[in-house]
Length: 261
Image 1 (cartoon, rainbow, N blue to C red):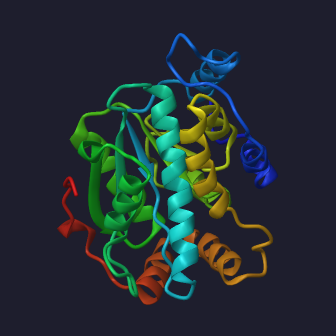
Image 2 (image 1 turned 30 degrees about the horizontal axis):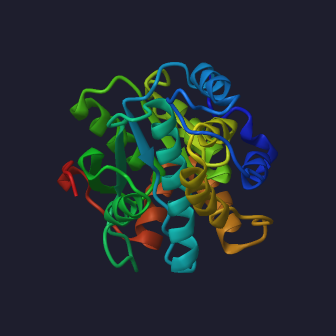
């Protein structure tokens, strides 16, 4: 089942998440009522548990850096919630990022994502970076390469609600294995269920990061215009590459390797 299939409401899940006020831990005898049911529904929604979860990049030179970082932090928080809910008390899935050093960025986007993940409490040993991508198509192929290199069966990618549909379309266009690659928005039902499995303090920390990255009414904004242009460009791969190279800077993905930051 597609873990993001319920996100078409444009933020309904995050509105529910923002209302969380309590609950129990995860994987303990003292779990509050409902935690086991939430984990069970999460497992049914995701199907096979992912061996790796990717935080998809978000950097546009014409957008405020603060906004881009808030969106990456929302994706990172959702990725951590999913990993911690699925593997309570364990090392959890690998946490991947593949954005290159793009125009105007202080560092490679994957390193920025890794730093945000560390700040949110990720296990440093599970982080993996490959600074290869300046557009979603390259990001997908890079993440698939990282999945194979790590020897994990399934990869779950976390992005924003407005981006998830395009990611699914690109997976199909590029003929990537949809059984091994899946995408979920940071505001989807799967994330809401994962958050319900966490202890209250941990839940609130991640909920706060997700809420800060939420965007309303972007249709006429620079970000909304960029997403519409990207969807049009995705229909013509050459145009997609030229658009990314001009706006974000040219990158050679063949030069990127996977490493632990």
